[in-house]
Image 1 (cartoon, rainbow, N blue to C red):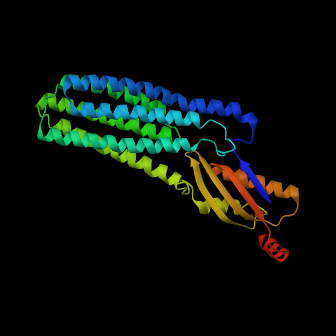
Image 2: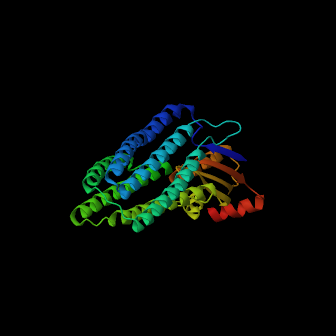
Image 3: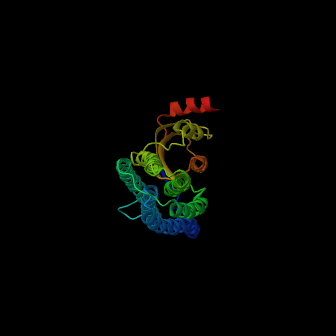
Length: 311
């Protein structure tokens, strides 16, 4: 017996609810894109006028983040498209492809910042700390607003976007401190030094994003779900004698997938349907939106023994 359960597409009546949910997910990203783009323009102008490497580095980070956020938004919109005969799971994995692209771009931008910082150590440049400070304050406020609207999101791209914006806020705060230091002491060496700090922030966030994205692409079990807990939950259902051949992986950041063989020798169709329904209900706690269950019963003698043990 086979039962195929596809949690996201089984009920056409849920379509409007899904559309509203997706709109709620994309709205914070759209606002973050606008804010980040405005910060980028302001920091480019401020960086050119002040001669600050840390401000230009932060502007480069902002540009990368605008691209990253747009990729995330595009992936989320495309992921709403229904499955096709040749793409049976839909386009959810585009979200992960965007996350990988984001991570690789982050590594690239960190390399550029490190290169420029090292060059500045050898050839110090004058910095206008007043312009640097004013632009950094504006950037900090805008970043905090963007982080606030993105906070609490659960899908991978929104969480990676939140990390981007939070990193931007921290780097903007650091630029403010550096500008004050330069204004008070005249020591411009702090500017390229801060560039290295920004690069480290970018590098660590990119490695974190890539780690989670590649775990999904390699079909690892979700990091926040223990397979043994899933099996225990399934086996605790009355009528289930055992669960084996369990495969648990992640389709995208908020949809887990499972297929498993369920040892159950119940012959009454109505009771069997109740068992299936209860198993699927318990799987919801693990965010398993798609499940394929194969029910097995090998021999009647085994059934009798297992039933006696179960009772």
